[in-house]
Image (cartoon, rainbow, N blue to C red; front, side, top):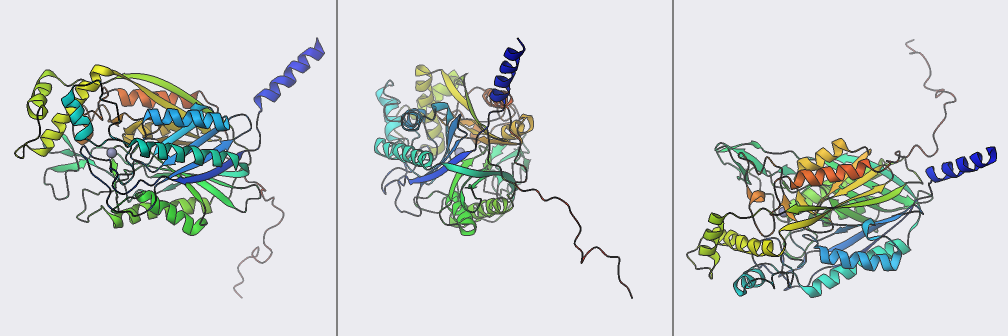
Length: 500
Ligand SMILES: [Zn+2]
């Protein structure tokens, strides 16, 4: 009896103290679109005419010997679920990483490849006119490009997995809050506007927060000498398009990190809760778009990342890996009878030169949303948690408002909690309930084929992410590798003042 008890006890101890040396690998692939392809980011068609810098899929794989996960930072406006499903299946087949352990976060680059807004076939169920609006009058994904992008993600993850090695891992946070701004403002009329523009006499104070945290994971070779790669989390729209095909500010973020830390470092960037965050300061007369803004934003966050990495001297060799998924079912908001009738009146026919362009575009969106509701009135929404030791990434497939990310950080039991928006699928803007309330309003609250979930969608995603984080067992941040022990003070310095 006694012997049996000891045996059972031994088993328990082994199971609960599982830890193995962390292995990690990094790789990237070029997913630059071709000149002439569509450049998504608006509600109509725009095409790429010039090239500025390469768009990439940047992958990091972490493996504790028990579970493995892959993080992918994607230079894209977003990624849709069918692509993610195909990529996850291929990665599972080639590496054994479970589909739920693969996180693909789009940077929201407004200067990258044709991934939408609309997917080919998405409106085949609708009338001929709605198909015309969706396929001819809106930005549509290019199936050739989707294949190229998916292949790039798969190859980057497989190479990161195959090249994984025992490593030193560190965690840290920096601060960059001077190049990001909340773009929503309370107005004198009691509503909230998006980008009221500098000099607007009716503009009051910002309607929401920013989140200046720069979250960083650094991974070094086992001897600590070579930085292999890093994961960076920070929240801001990637709308600093420098002109032409570009990874947007992420290009300069990578450039800044590489300038300090080494030219081959893979920088896996995951955008935080940035649905209402922009590089544009509506309180400043200085223009904040284009190349200069891209350098300023990317360079500042990249320099801060390098600072965090340089100071990351406390590193571990173990980190527990875990991943969990939750699928929510969230209904769409339905356009009312009056809105629908007005939309039919305006966009139920080809646009006339006398039509107000903005009104026509959003009438088109109302009609397209109506068609989507006929097919799918309730959306399945994936929320994912990925643990790497003392850090957890909490995903939403939304252009998620900043406040939700701050709420998650506050409620999470982890030392480092990093929200990732536009991850693993796409549900458009998800504002706070206040933004959809009587004092709300603004661009993100417009009811479109892109953004249309019910007002409590954001809170439900937030709470699901927090629940997942709470169901995991956070690891301790690494302790000093070779801690110094006190023997004696510095002999030169341990004296009273010598004044004579
Ligand atoms: Zn956006």
